Length: 488
Image (tube, rainbow, N blue to C red; front, side, top):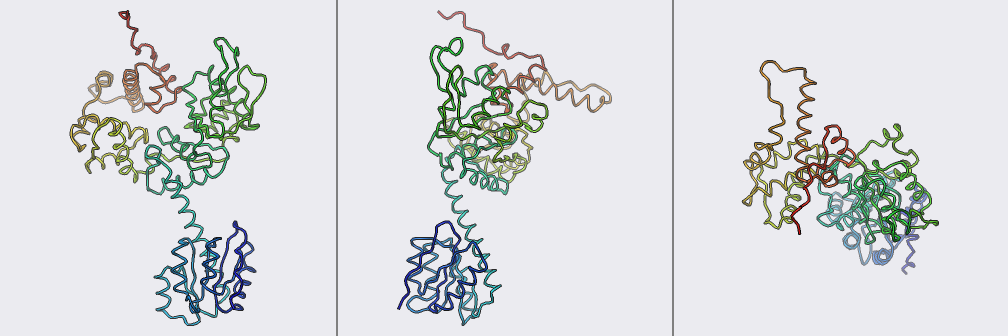
């Protein structure tokens, strides 16, 4: 008479199910496993039909099944169980083990094969490996589902080891609600990482607000973030909700968090401690639910030592952390990434999809890319614009990128004097200074003196760009178009 189907227990435990038409033997295995593993539940079944019914309602990680059973034998059960539960690790056992039987079981999908009588230590080793295998399979399946949510423009492209580690870290972080600090050089995809975390987490579908902290003037940043009451300052003729309120129940990404002033840092710290904001000029605080993801390319530890950044805020932000690898550390991804970025550039410009010839791909792979993915994207956009055909070849690369320096660069690179060169450091400093002046001239000319746009294009922070301008004695205003005095 069949025994009653046992429950598999709570859904948060690791479980091993044992299937054998000899109940005493099956219960003996269960006692061995339960006695050796404190965190493993066991359940005993006397037929394949019974265990399949139970697995339909509750999962297990490992199944140990006898080979010879009436109605449904071990091989049949193995095939049906794996068809419905591919992450299950199945161990087949038999008192009549042969090499042919073992090979057949493994080819059918069994994780391992044991013969009776079973040595306890051998049993324990198989259970440990089976549990770990099932955990990894379940984790990989979950990550594939999470990554599948990403659209083309927010996808973290790359199949190399560094890219895979970052994706797995971000997907794991997404399952929590803690504050996150994303670190890395300019152009490594810190905003993409923040979007990935948001879309893979419980707040997906809720607001995702990006704040480029350096792009907002310091005297307006507090109002932008936390809002203001009517009459809070001159010109505040009505109340305004801030970006934190707009992100309620969602996520706010504070980009370049290392550039904000100490007073704003204090207000942000209060929110992270209490979950409350107080608009500028308001008498009462308001409680909101926002997950904070901050990012920076600065060395915050050094900023703390120099008293530019609050240590208590650093520890509030750095609950979970991820470092985005620079492009030079994942060169194996450049071919895939270049193809993706070129397709996006063509779509942005409304042009037919273009291709990169192999020699161009080799050239791209060999470059150091100090500007990381953003620099690669700008190069591909430039090549796409000047490509009149369907294929970007190395001749176009030489014509557009290598052989045609800008007029400003040509005029500012120092002429090579006759005779031996001067000291290395002095010569290098002069070349770097000339390059910087030429680059800034081209940058501000192209952006018409718009500092925020220039910072975005160059990958520099607004503060860093302003420091370079001050050192060079340049003013952004001189690049701005004069007002049209002929307008009626």
